[in-house]
Image 1: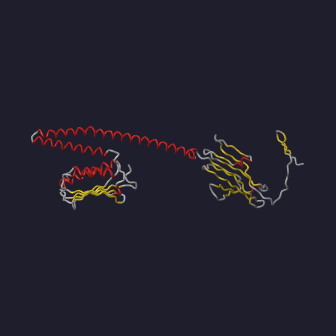
Image 2: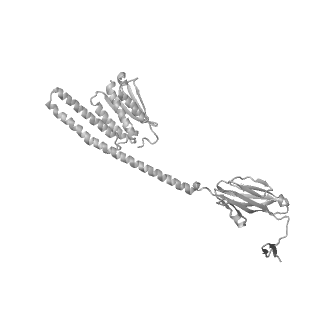
Image 3: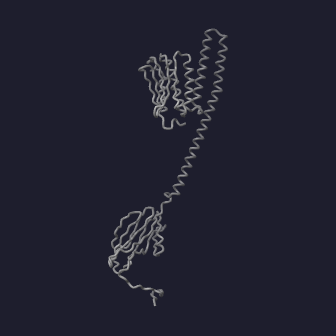
Length: 375
């Protein structure tokens, strides 16, 4: 009546309504995955036999990616002669023969998602059995997962932002201190020098010619000291970091330097570069190089014209100062100002040269990037 009874040492197993289908030699065969073996978190082997577990696939930890898969062909007539083939989608796309071995083991799969395909051929009918599939996922280590990488990236970005913020605050503090020192120098030291010069001028009417000459030198020294101090204060003031401000200061300096000289001066500034920004160090070094160059023209050259040109050539900013006279070479070579100009140019990685072949030509070439002179 379709009931099957099997005796065991613990009793009887009863199976009701067993439907036995007649065997057909032409029926299609298939490969069935019968069991799985994996390693659990404690490193112990765990086995699965249920068809539902196989259908769900298997998840493996990155710490223990061992997997053993057993299977069989539903043609049992010569089961020991059945042959099997497999391919692991995600690792290789070619079928690999297992021969008559009905199991396969993977010892160390890398993290990722795979699909195992197993097919077989039975000796009984020489037909290819329908393949079985198993979905396999090997979990990634936590520090390689997207969420962890994003969190680490955000944390690093936060640290960088904080470091930049601290650095900016310190720079602001330094600039404030520098501005305060400049203001104090201008107000205190400048006022003292001014009073000394004024008192010396008042005393000139009450002394003899020799003493008046000494007072005149004192007055001249005080005014020179005030002028030099203003130049130093200007060079450290961050409010004047454009090329236009540099040109204005150079113009003022040249007017004061050359006002008692018979040399005719010309200043030509390219409009293209006037709106650019320069760094504190560039502003300071360029100004004092040009200032020293004009002083050298007064001391060591005998020409009639001094011409300063400033322009941009590709990725270089060029300053040229030309005097049409003959330079006194011996005095120029022993001048400490020349060494200072070379030293200042090297600080801003500029090329500085002097040509005395035809007149007296000073050239300062400053390399610039695409974004010119970022503050």
